[in-house]
Amino acid sequence: MASMDADKLSYEIFSILESKFLFSGSPAIAGVSGGRVRILSIDGGDRPSDALLAAAALARLESSLRVRTGDPSASVADLFDVAAGSGAGGVLAAMLFTKGPDGRPLLSVAKALRLLAAESRRRGGRGFGTSGLLRRRPGGFFRRVFGDATLRDAVKPVLIPCYDLATAAPFLFSRADAVEADGFDFRVWEVCAATCAGSSAMELRSVDGRTRVSAVGGRVAMANPTAAAITHVLLNKQEFPFACGVEDLLVVSLGAAPAEPSAVGGAELLRITGECVADMVDQTVAMAFGNLRTSNYIRIQANGFTSGNCSSKSKNLLQSVEDMLLQRNMESSLFRGKKISQQSHSDKLDQIVVELIEEEEKRKKSSIPLVVIKQAATTSQMSSPCPFSQTDGSSSSSSSAKMKLSEPLT
Image (cartoon, rainbow, N blue to C red; front, side, top):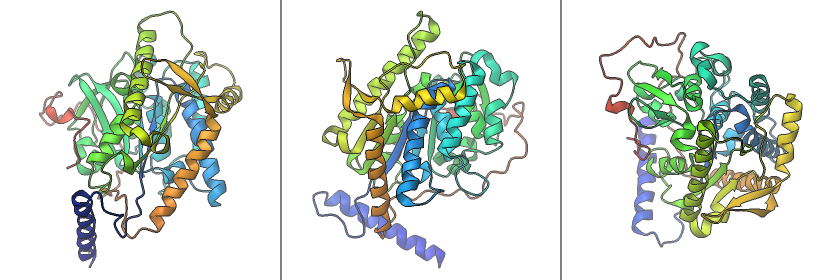
């Protein structure tokens, strides 16, 4: 009976897809609400403070969601279908979308914000991967937070990038790939270490030991993962069967707070490059949305610098981040610099939560699921890490470890 129901659902979905492709100018198809896939993208460098603005913004979203729905347990993961994060932004995404023991997200945004602020203070402004600390102290902060959870344990699709030195190409850690193949399932704490790795590469293997990655930070691969997230959704027809173009998406992109310029050196040039690439992606995506930019694509970008010295008390740091939400939003224009918009970050966030809740209400009225998240056959239960010394005879630079960012889910 279950098989017959699944076959019927598949038939209905593909019948609707066929109708949409053949009769794109026809009225809305019965049973489909016209809802949009909701994407969250978070920029970030390697410092905990790089994700604090995004965490504060999401804390406001989560608080507003709970007030508007009357559900004290509502979470950001309920508002979005996909989360992508780079560097410290990837750590934040993992915190909010990894499954806890009760099946709900592991952390609320408020708790994640406190953890990041405390870690920022403890490190005195240094990055998560500074001086190879991750290799000398396996696990550390990340392992305390995530334990042995793997990508399969995410409650929603998650995308976190790094740059793989073994293949000389970006590598995108993905829940969708982890569910499809053991060779792409990695422990979450190692994924976070990989996307934040600095000058010392982070060596990690998949849970089954078959895929090896020699990772440096996500900001090297993609400081702004928005384009990768959009590509993933549009090509992943198994989980997002009705997403055919930007009109079917609602994207919320959170930029990292820019650091105050200092003496130009290798690290400073890397930071500047990352910020420029992030702005370039923002402009490219905005142009792709065209007339839908103001309704389907929302970018939150700080208009002031954050201090590189984060050794102040956590409550003072949190207050400064909260103050940033009261600033007016920054908008960049390609080759024309940046300008201050008329809306504050808080105003924009209030607008976002209304849109997200409306999307959720549309889905409740639809007879066909807009998003069909593939479930893993079993939840990962690893009691001990897989030794890096174990091999299956394959080369560490095998083609299976080089993932194409535009590759569809198969």
